[in-house]
Image: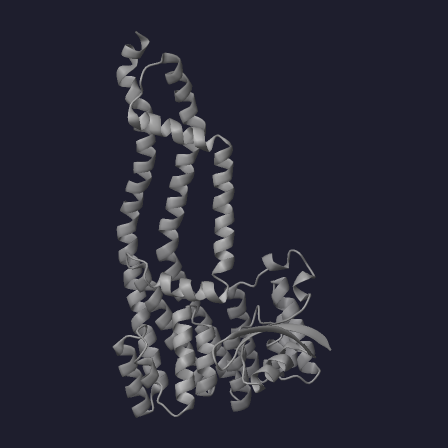
Length: 403
């Protein structure tokens, strides 16, 4: 028996963190679910300290997709699961994925179900992956479900890439502009400042401001400002992973102007629709599917809304009813869900919703990019140009200063 640290949500929505003994991650998670808890994470204590470089050795999504598709093909061809896993482990180039496949194969040989073996590696096979595999095992359509999982992973990654592209470009350009400006203030401006000091006279206001900023950056205050910026970034990244941080940031990010919040919301709605539809097609029970979808939504507002709707659905309400009271879900979503429930075509409706919002995200990202690119050029040019002009302004009075 090993000691496992877990993080879970109780029926009242409170986050619980504690330790418990268990034989493996799967058994601990099953025990917590029987107690009425929504499991968020379960990790063996000390497991993350085995290798200091382990956090940097990830599994690329492309490697996971290839593994899943090949695994599906082998199962469909009639190969036993153990033999298929052994073959895939031998040909997988990614060391971390190879080790995980070997451990999964060993657990399956020991009598574990495939889903239980996969559940021991949450950093590679997320809850959506595991639950869809479990549904495929129960329904005897494991090969078909694995293909759906691969397609789901590919579409989800593509959607995330589109959303990140809308936010990454302006962020990178702005950072480069700040670095360029800081470089000029630290290394270029002091050269002009010494020359102006030797000449004497009163310098123009823009020049005095640039020299003052240079003096701050080249003094101890500059080091403190840099340390504060790095510390603030680290603190922010840690903070948004806490429950309070996730709640505040989840609401804030939806309100970011210039269509950024719009893109995030529509992307989260597309991910919600596609994930819930994929789980429904795989045969996962609706309450369990809502829990999984909430955890993989990527936004606290949608996660909280889905968990509240799950409680209402457990009491007998249709899926769309509680979502109508959530502002984050547009009327189009709830109306289409209502039609899907009435006609028995819920999965098809969810697929259409996902396709609609994915096209919305794609169109908005393209529009944002066309607007942001020239805007960022103006910003960068403005920062650099302001510094250059402030240094050249005294040149117009150079002869007066010499006299």
